[in-house]
Length: 234
Image (cartoon, rainbow, N blue to C red; front, side, top):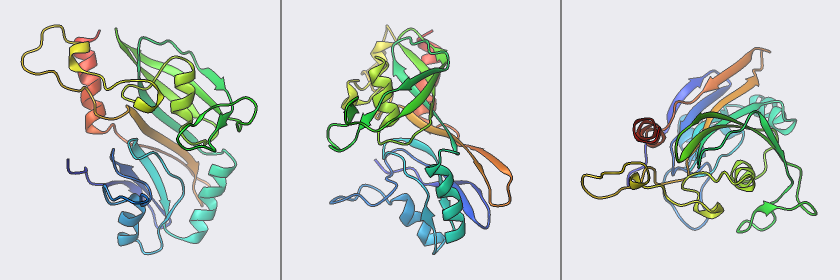
């Protein structure tokens, strides 16, 4: 499957916000090459481009890159001091009702193959969840991580028995059309072929002091997933 191209959402002389498609890595992957990484794409256009943060390879959505050292320092400090508001949208298994529900559970990321809740050795992690839409078998959830631990949203949702659809690592399965459509014409097929997580919005302070609030539209596969849920899973 040919990866979808990276696209620009907004740029200034100091930074660029891009839409990272699913299955595109933020940085080069060790020992393999599946698609051109975001940093390589950016440095082909802006020689001094620097990543300010990363998102998982399967996650779609907004990323910000600095075009110079001053912008990188300015934006990275906001990430470090938790001053940037990050909003993700996820489709999870089951009807789930969160009302601005905060999960405050420490996460241990020392073993990359076994990232987990660990109240003894984990690092603090907080995420607020709010249900945007519910269906018979799934829910659309807004996720606002305060901290930035690896796999934080995925681990925190799993801890609340609200696994992200298609997230095999944390106990979900690839969702199939037969789950929501009683009478199939033709073969069964996946509703989505990755875990259904999208980096929807970043809110940060620009170098001139203005507040920037930038959104990434849903990736096509997530948009189709939601359209099918609204049609067949009400």
